Length: 154
Image (cartoon, rainbow, N blue to C red; front, side):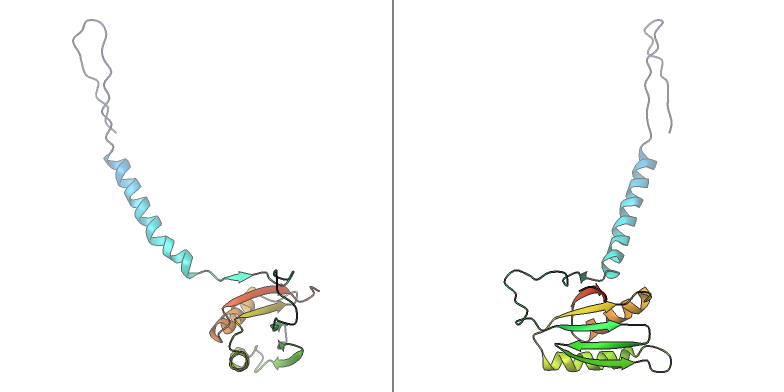
């Protein structure tokens, strides 16, 4: 910033005129705005939509009208729950079998094409990466509305 003090020629008092160079400040703001606009798109790409629907019923919804589809994630297997039926999906080769989970969920989706919501029940100690892969498997099988619940909840 450059400041110039000019001589007004009016006796003993000198006028203090300051010329501020605002170009660097405007350049900085322009760069910041461009950076924020460019990085704002990444917040949309890295977001998972998960709701907590399991605690209460929606208004006008009865238990008999709603088809419950859930995946219980434990350390050693998945457990696919459709209504009152349970189907265990054990580990394959020491790792959770996401491919078989997707196949089973696609079969459930074909049997119930109107269902779009799925509950993911997690036991304590499950790594977050496992939950994210389970959510990805559910979304790829055609269940975009996910709920993440604790397996111990009533």
